[in-house]
Image (cartoon, rainbow, N blue to C red; front, top):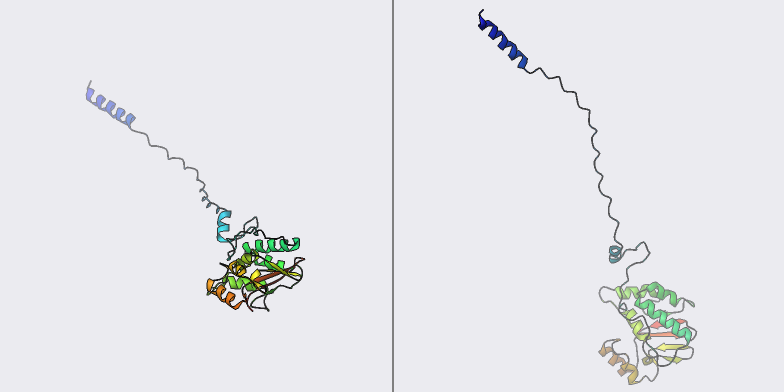
Length: 220
């Protein structure tokens, strides 16, 4: 028997058996759901301290402290050489506290507490608080009105009738000691001129014995 054709047939069968069968088509993958974009982070709450620094009102209702010439002075009145009537002492204390706090509205309220009777300098057609704020904030030549108000109320006082006045340099027959007490209130040359003329033209304050703040006047 011729074995060559048989061998060839076997080899062919073996090759066909080893050939890789065709792969079945892959199953289509399930469609994926597109992911949602990540929302941006919420803005941070404003810092309360930053609001205060910026001068804004905080949730607690507080605001930055105002600025004026009296801001760095003590809100506590200096002791007096002799006692003041209680109503006068109370008004003096509250005026000083409001001035150091740069609180013009509070000063206006104190002036109107017992009637709109406070006489003040410069503009009789304008309320006291507005006038003083304008003088304090005048860009060309700011005037330290509130600082002088505090300083004057810390000077010696005297009484004339129903009114208690500051300073004693305003009274008739003011002494050298009365003028020395004014040191630092006005420039030295102005104080020397006033003393020479025997006429104190600086700020003077008057409160009645029952606590009515009646004047805060400078000049003639």
